[in-house]
Length: 379
Image (tube, rainbow, N blue to C red; front, side, top):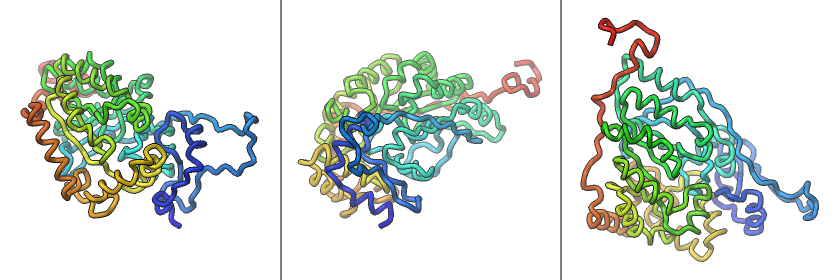
């Protein structure tokens, strides 16, 4: 059986308790081989280990960083259902461990598992800031809003020490380049000394991913993210500092966090958010198996209903990848969510104003910054 099919059929309740010991504090419950590998493999207990022998007890998984040295740092896209055309992702893989993360399948391209490998083997780009300055200095470069993230979280735990995201912001602030950020982490407040002055110039906006007010659900679904109340506080502090804040209630998971939709929007509006968005749960490739495995282990009483409602928005499938459908679905249930969201945002005064970031202030790295020829008038 091909690896991708095993992701859909694998459901072994006997393994879950032991896997939790191994992956305590992680989101995924398994680490099966990615879809591109010729052989399928996953950890298996053969029964030879003795419970009282330390050598055979599962060891807690530790995070490993892998240095990546790309030649460029800005990635461009032409997707018709994404509102930005360029991104910077300083990290690949994410310690936050959100079970639903749409970026998980990317680890398969590197010969790694979209499961626990995605949460524990993190690719980092320490040269990001210098690469960015080099790209901004090109004569052909045209300024436009850069989405800082778009793949994995720019303020995941490793950022506290590595400070790659902060170094990127330093460059963007130096040259008055517009940037949008999205995160689940309160660590973004560390960089308010850069972000707030940029906001005063109309150069920055921030989206905070806000999925639930239920602490238990958050801890299970997003094990290493900021707690719900910290995300509310983060929105409040950003807003108080003059930063335009969007609450991303994403993903909306039927019968799990979907009942909280209006409460989430109310809490965000009260914290100063001026815009909001949502995305219906997406389950492409390996995520379908990882999510259903997690769902059956943690919410067995709701698992069938969650998946039945989700499939009703994708013509009976777990997921459809078509533009405009992949993040919204269609059909009666999808329409109901869309109407609830529209009614709540209208009532709360959200999405009444557009946030347009300025590009006219951008000044490319000058000769004095890059070591090239000086300006004629020494400016």
